[in-house]
Length: 227
Ligand code: DC
Image (cartoon, rainbow, N blue to C red; front, side):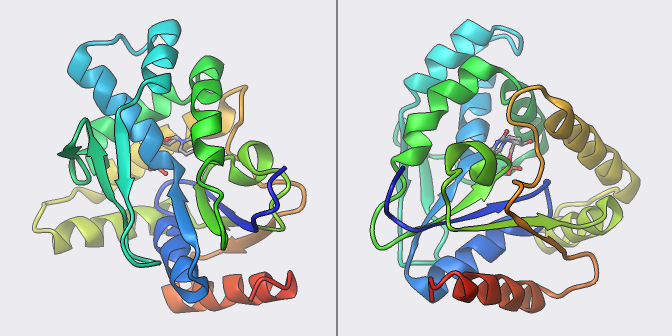
């Protein structure tokens, strides 16, 4: 296992782990791994190249060869995500890509193909890794593990607010349904299902502000001597 300190932040879609990961990275000057982006990039590749959602071998091969670059900015700034040189940062956040990502992520061979690439993000002075299996599979030796949860209704409301902020119309009941579908797939797959590691601290952010969640996470990080 790596000696670089890793802070693992796992949780379901819309739990806010992405923004919390960036806030923690900014506070500590750490690198960030947005592991969901890798599954989304593979999903986009499959959609564009016409790889079938059930062709595990072809998906795993594509995952090994993903021509992706994460252009890191200052600590805490979201990286620019380039696929074959093209900025796809916005495209991979769209719902069709998210649903496809959740499907391709269920295949063991796909997960295996992305493992080394994820571990390579652990570089000095440290890494904040966000995803579903950071604490259970990718970085089981991480000194600090957080599992960030929130009710599906609250997560859908946050997503609605985000979409409206971008000038995109949103339908709350549909967002709830889409999140439920993705959660079900992510929680019930046999390989690396979404679940807290045995040594993770679970934070339910349903009734907490982003700042309150950040403070709780930083308290855990400090308990582990990382700040
Ligand atoms: O975090 P996200 O919404 O960007 O992730 C997109 C999908 O990728 C999610 O539905 C499940 C999958 N995923 C995964 O299986 N393991 C991870 N570590 C991160 C994401």
